[in-house]
Length: 215
Ligand SMILES: [Fe+2]
Image (cartoon, rainbow, N blue to C red):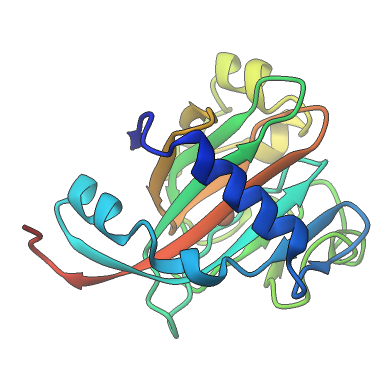
């Protein structure tokens, strides 16, 4: 789900400044940097709760700057029970970019699939806490497998940086990133960044449900 035009430009600039000035900023691998969202961890609780119709609370999150599309993965963590993600784009690359959210789910704790690469290769680019699954999602016990090739349009427009066979069994939707918007999705659904060129900065916050009915 997309919440359109909700974050004013001044707030976006504050986030960018917080990321740049962060002392906790930690480069992981060569092509990305993380930072703590500090006081903003709970800044969007009300907006997201209203949109979902459920009370939620931000329990973890990070700024994320990268130059390579992030691989298919999930973000659920049973210790935090952080079932929803909010993605807030802050700086967009030169080419259009968004998030592909697949219809297939991984019900266990978060995982990242290495696709055509080995675990060893991918481990250089992701945080050491990520549970790497060698190969493609369809090789694992994910829900809702289609038993066919990925849709041509989805592949050609957004996912052509992968081998088509590594996306076998998946279907999904593309949500473009636009400054001012918040993208909210269930983080057990497998998702990945679409193809892009340039540098991208975003804030990602993960929420747990604290109230089934909100408002
Ligand atoms: Fe994610």
